[in-house]
Length: 187
Image (cartoon, rainbow, N blue to C red; front, side, top):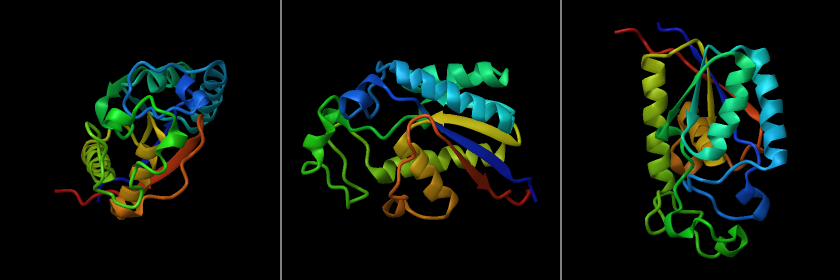
């Protein structure tokens, strides 16, 4: 049996669009607020105590800025990957989130906004990444700096649940969520 893999899922600190209540999705250029930098530094300190051997990050700015805090705290470089991006909301990105409750079909995992990504697609993207990490882990403990829906998808994948069964609770900005992946049988 291959050894188990521990993932430390870090949700980025508060971004300017979090503070403004805007739908972010995969909008790339949204930076952290001052509070977001403090949250990222606190998450980085927590992460350092957990001693990851590798750090991967979403390539979206708010995650990259958070990963910079994490990398400094653990003394490791980080690598970015689009596989850790937030769910894409296409034409809805940049709109006030409160206006979208009646637009988004939150009950259908196959629904997506024009130019966006469904929960099923997000779940598949995250499942592929976790399978690659399990097959060839860069370390026994890996920090993944990412986004709320991506963390929920990772939790569902690890629990063997599909895209219709993502956890309802999104971790807060600047938090660390521990996830254990069982080792796969060696070939």
